[in-house]
Length: 214
Length: 214
Image (cartoon, rainbow over all chains, first blue to last red):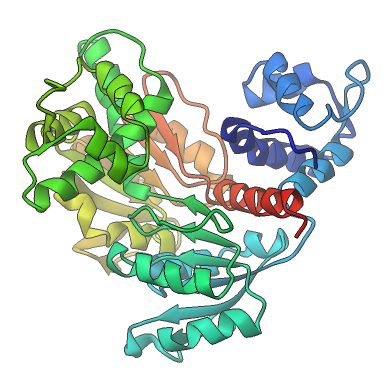
């Protein structure tokens, strides 16, 4: 990959391209123009071309894009041509929901272990994974070549757990704990702050009502 | 509120300000300068001032901001001074996880009903809510003054359910289904596409490794 800095806004749009291209591929569509893609995805064709130009453009505009090629190239950029080993820290409802989401596995995300501090959950099986005590996490990460940890624990424990994971050489943290983690630049963090997202929704509802005197 | 267009990027940052200010308030801190807030939140002080200027600035810079006032004002902007009635459509693990998240209630998000198409789940109680058949959803939304629907169902059903909800006058949809919904501008949608977020993480891992020859 080139060393050019690509904005997080562009990166945020890549999974959505990947999703739509996957659907087109499944429908047996072989070629698509940026205009057709624009109509389906409801973004401008020039936005699509600009986004793709960050990665070399992906082929001729006149003929349109080859769907399968584009799907695979974007998949590579997203790191989906490699398998990823994951653990889930926090075996509550949210951790279980993620463990049970089969689509992740199809994309190369392999859930290898699950951890919780609640002894009542230890030994419980969730999709072939036994819930283990937190004390076993560090050794497990090392022994099983885990690269991503999913944190579905309350915010109080999250900072300490993240520190431990960093020490064990984790590459990425998918953080659902409602706190910003402070990790070195060698570790990538993607936050899913659910209540932030819900507040953004109420902001937009509120704003729509103010503007329309509802 | 003024009719000025405020970018979604600014809006995305508001819940984070709200979260940090809530913590400062809980710690008994009364005043904070934009520089101090900048140090804690790891955004520049000028970014903070710029963001706040979208809403009139929230008070004197020389003296710093009054924490509680700022917290409450941002809360109002986010629509958190009003109560919101919600239903959850989809009573699987993810729906249950959201139903059990007590912090939502403290912020005025009141879960009133839960729906699922699986008859095996009907009658099951999740935090005082009985899981009801989908056929009851439309009438329930009307009778209980529901303004927000949380969609935690697979993508195949989501578009149809969203159409029904729009017809019943829902104001907002918090969409966890892995599909983009096509609703009129009168209805606000906030998407949480979990696998998009996971792919963004692997992109950043991949990129970090490429750039550092790992």
